[in-house]
Image 1: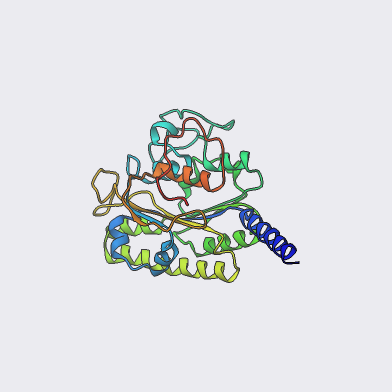
Image 2: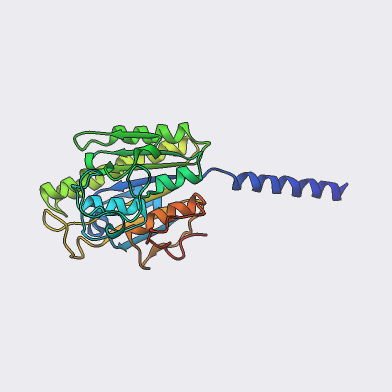
Length: 300
């Protein structure tokens, strides 16, 4: 009888373990434009702190050059630098650009993590929320299930949409990109490290806390990976140069597959984000033109 009991117990435990391992990968990317390392160190952001407490934080991540918006967000999502993806300015469009990308999809866009996911993991649900209209120009919307643009630097409605999307697709693998430009515009309008810039960071941290609490209530927080990414820092009221204020940014990740490593100082680049996402979702084949690398020691 005891032998049968223990055999049954082992089968139950194995079955439970297998079920746990089959939970769909889920990632929420929180993107804050112009969020410098200096700003991270100065502003109060208790909700971001709690979010990444069990994961990895880099405060020495390097943007790609030039240290401006569109080349860097494109690098995050394509595992490549401007020399590969061809986005060298904020004025880039599919119809008008100087540098030809190394590889493109059938529509002429450089190969993004969204394309890679949709082609290898077809059940993955992908959402893209933004409030700077040029941001999506290098991204092929074909691979996105939901797209939402919020005007006039507003972002709260997109935060609500992101929650609803994650809840609706909680049984599917899901990637949500949730971006806001208001932090960057505070830097341009009032100066990086001005009281208004710091307030912009602290204000969005409150909204991040609301979103995280709702995910906890819905019981999908613990199974979710969270990323904090940005494009560049700033100095005075601008950016685009090579000062450390512009060329050093925070980058963080936490979640079921991530080690609790705390602050890391190993080399990291905005080009690495897409490779981390590919690893989380179990992508087996990456584009040959991607030049990012997987940061060492962050996965369990």
